Image (cartoon, rainbow over all chains, first blue to last red; front, side, top):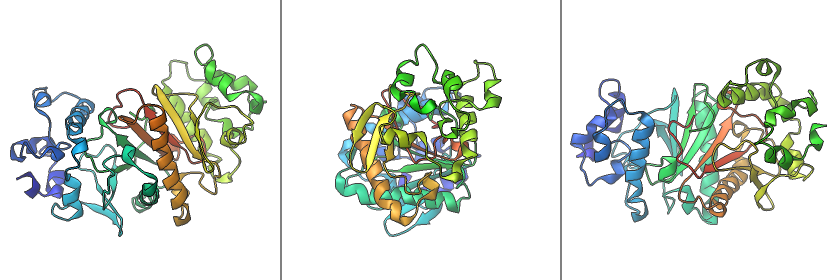
Length: 183
Length: 183
């Protein structure tokens, strides 16, 4: 049933209902929805638990199936089965807003064809072309969002970097002073 | 005189002498050394000021000259005028350790030819090739450093993202649990 929940609805309702609360509607087997739901042990934690721990827990849960190469929620977004708030799109690349933004602007940039790139660490030399297109698309996104004078691009690889969807994605963040270290 | 201070010496002495303390030896006019020294207003701050503020202040100082296109300390590293701890090198890309590491592994990946890429925001379509090579080099670095299962790539663009050297560079960080948000 999770797949039928509009992505934009989840995002837009975040002020009233946390994306974490869609859990009862999500199939437990849909592990690729794990960015948006909490694993069992985290659900037992009080809601005062910091977002960092939630993200770490979600990433650890997602990593269990990382090498299975199963479709992710991004496939549904690419195929427009789940609506998303698209910022930029071309033949190879899709950019849409993160439903759990960490800055006034927070956009995800992904390749439309995963082509083995569950994570950056899986890149082969043949991927250099799409990697360049993704980074250039991040610049286009920053321009469109009016943050060209100040933005950060982040790629998480693996659980210890908080990767929670195994389809390569670049985070483009801006609109506030970013801190150092970067997480 | 700053240019004659061995980069590795600064790094290796960090346990005893903060890189910030090389200030008396740095020419004030060498603004591209601003990553490693503090602007005047920051020098007045107590040393208890967090690293975040130091980095933000250094980035703001560096941004003043961002559009001048002057050589940066990275040119001296590329030309081996300043020694660095090189992790990976090919015809187009150089990767070396950050002198102020924010994780057990913290490597900078840069294009040997800046070619207008003072920052990612200056990228044109012609830069897609080198952008792809840089991201792929980040993967090679992660592999060489033994952090392929967990690493984060970060690109700072502009003062509000803490960019302090105006020669495009990718941070590759790993060897610890990274937090969320990413700064």
